[in-house]
Image (cartoon, rainbow, N blue to C red; front, side, top):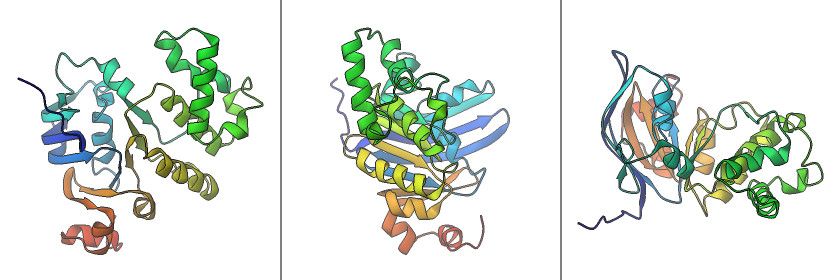
Length: 257
């Protein structure tokens, strides 16, 4: 039987549940995450949004007590299948974390790290990947003359863009971002937001954010989660201007959360 890939959905999540031990953190999630769009996931602390995000590249499995049911398909392939190698999944589905986490290495080595692990040894090829990735992360002009300096010497906003460049260097299909600007000042936040909008041309982006204004500014679609449930998932403009569920309206108007 020929597998037909749904070109509009990077991820298809069906009847998905997740438990930490005996505590159910995610309840019966059904959603399709569209390709080459920015999908924001919002909701109060502890609602399950970061748990859902970390499930998409199976990082959640680093916690030993996790159990799941239902299915998550990436490009129509079950991510929990024994045939799906975690390393391969994480090559296609990259991740940028809340706090910038560059390696204690040079800027160059931070970005070249992934390609080297994947067997690329030629310096000319690595040079090209590093430059392309730093340009893609909109930071090449700021660091091109100090590639051999330690990435720890950069500002927080620059470090976060180095982490994005490191993610781009392995040529992912999807970039997951877990509150990528929450540790940054407003100017750095704006630069990262502009970068995220630019990256949408080539990547599918899923961003968890506690900042509703950020979701409204940069995302195409927004999912609102509450107590582990997906309350509403629709076009961002629709969700913020005319929510269908009273709980969504209460959250975005500041009545709780």
